[in-house]
Amino acid sequence: MKKKLVALLTAGVLVTGVLTGCGGSNTVETTKEETTEADETEASETEEETTEEASEDTADNGETVTIKIAASPTPHAEILNQAKVILADKGYDLEITEFEDYVQPNEVVESGEYDANYFQHIPYLDSFNEEKGTHLVNAGGIHYEPFGIYPGTKTSLDDIEDGDSIAVPNDTTNEARALLLLQDNGIITLKEGAGLTATVNDIEENPHNINIVELEAAQVARVVSENAYVVLNGNYALEAGYSVGKDALAYEQNDSEAAKTYVNVIAVKEGNENNDAIKALVEVLKSDEIKDYINNTYDGAVVPFE
Image (cartoon, rainbow, N blue to C red):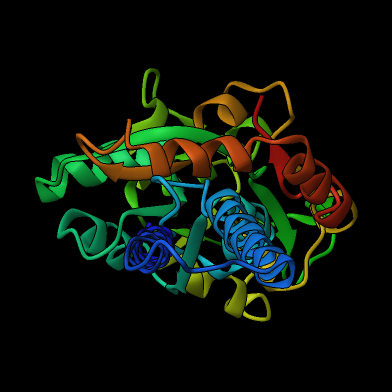
């Protein structure tokens, strides 16, 4: 808009100058060459102004809007980097910062330092709000990552023995998800109704006397040599070089309730979910271009959410 205003003011000055010059004397003669040069100058200025106006006809009346977003490195930041290119054409500068933990990304959005984050599913978001007193909301579901049981010192679930250890994430919702997956594969049985709040205290039957090792989610993939099996979040499995389709001994199915429940979302502070920039971000992340990128890149470890 500033460039456009300057161009308009400049054009105004030129017009004023011409009128003043013409009004100074009735004997002033304008040659054909001068008229041509004046016409060419005016046309050039008009073309420049039109070009500037068209190029600035993007987000927020031509002003580039910055969206600051916090994200886990894989796959979230990778997906966002694909969206960044598309958003740039729409007048948005997507500024991505990677975080290695599950706490800071929510804290910086709650404080207003960042506009959004992309790393978590709804149960974790709800749990975080309840525990921390934050006011974060879902602005749009983007993808889900099938939870999987991966080999540690053993390469088949058929080889499980009494006293084996299995490492799982220790945060509330992800631990429950891991335990539910172990239950689905006949390794443990949880108390009826334990559901998405299940902890090791809800294990009702443990026929193999399995030792559940609870670790911060980012640490689980690092103890594969110390445990018979590990249960990993999709993004940490990717970071560890695992493929769901090729490496997981068992995983959540695409049509499972878990897949629907644990969709990863764009989270914002309450009241910002209808912000134009956030809407544009979600729209691009749900576009066919991004869906194709996800499907072609992650070998089933990341699945677009419809």
